[in-house]
Length: 248
Ligand code: PGA
Image 1 (spheres, rainbow, N blue to C red):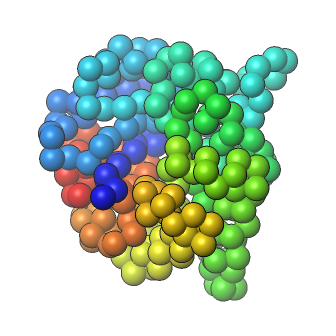
Image 2: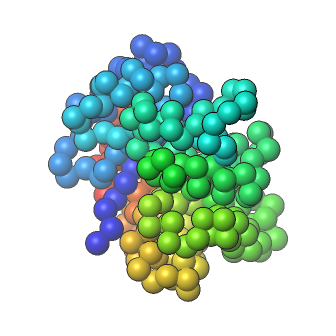
Image 3: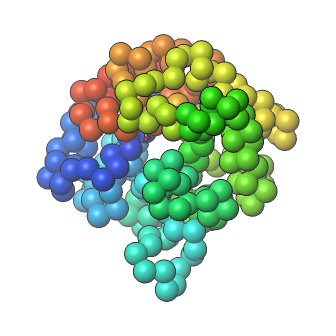
């Protein structure tokens, strides 16, 4: 049985004080019946948040990780550094990274491998743009994004990973995929993995992301292949994030 997981992606928002208040609010509201929960915070808030989440049910993550181990890579943050500040997870391949900062399938694969090598669980984001969906390329895009990482890391590596399906047209737009649209792609992803390794596919947590909110989370999470969510906007408010955590 797969456990449900809800991950907040705070993106580039907040202050140190607001981040602490938000984390405290989330910690206070989590209950044993909630989904497993994590917050992916801006890098500079991580050390402070590490202290706050210690001994609680809330796990910590980063929003990206370097594609190299260490060295002269100005501005980058390595997987070892994330591990040192208590990160259990690191998002890799978020569409905002792919769109605005030039992350490619290959560099995403390298980030994925770096995270794994230091015991940080990569949350691999994949998903199509509106244009790609309208041209019936959704599955081809998913194939390509998954293949790049499987070729680099090997299918066995996915035992230590999480996948987030995030249709780009649904991120931050208020346009959520319908339960059926999301399920269709989640099922496709699981079948794709199953063709390579049935056990990995059966155990893979596949999260949905893209305008997930308290009022649509229940329907999405009830779908057989949706194991939780990667939550952007709605994770910036403790109450709405907690409602989503309680929707599993
Ligand atoms: P959103 O973002 O929930 O604000 O659409 C999701 C994400 O980008 O991970």
